[in-house]
Amino acid sequence: MATQAATVSEAGSGMSRREFLYYIWAASIALLTLQGAGLLIWFLIPRFREGEFGGKFVLGIAELPGVNDPPVNFPDGRFWLVNLNTQEPNDLMFAAPDETQPIVGVCAVYKVCTHLGCIYSWTPANDRFECPCHGSKYRLDGRRIESPAPRTLDRFLVEALAEDRTTVLATSTLSNDFYDPLVLPAGTTFLSIDTGSRKLGPSQPLLCSFTGSCP
Image (cartoon, rainbow, N blue to C red; front, side, top):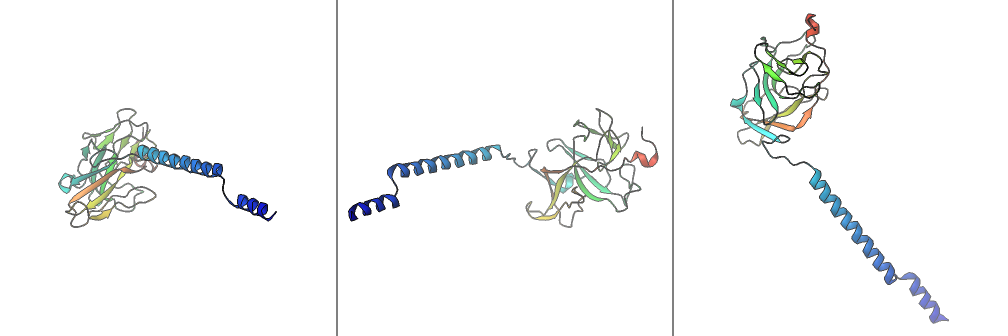
């Protein structure tokens, strides 16, 4: 009787061969599932190289346009580089009545119209960006002049880099989740434009509304 009780106790406290194989099988399936999920995530996450849209573009400071000069086009990055200062206004860049703070610094403006995604261009004759698809118009910094565009042009993150191309001296700051122009500090030698970091332009009043000349 004592021997039988001992046998039953050992059987109850141990693991059968079938149970052991089941746990091994389940662990193997879980491991394979995790590996497959990891490979899928690695495949789906976009990987962009420098100088490729979706990645960073590093430009020499000499490529920056002059203050309130026409924008410089970077088609590979799908952006315009602008250098703004409403304290030195001209026909290209000026302060609107609702802009109480100076607009000063560098912006990288996305080259896609916020209406239906057409590619707009700079029109020197009118000193503004104009979309050929439906007539939306924008100021040098991307603010809407005329609709049907629903909002200001989007912007990319800008960083000021030192001579070594890696030391970050300043980075675009956010106001209401939109990149402000970046004032370049002393020692800036390169600019880094991160086309993978884009902020949507805000819905500001049309500039034409201040002059009463909206169509």
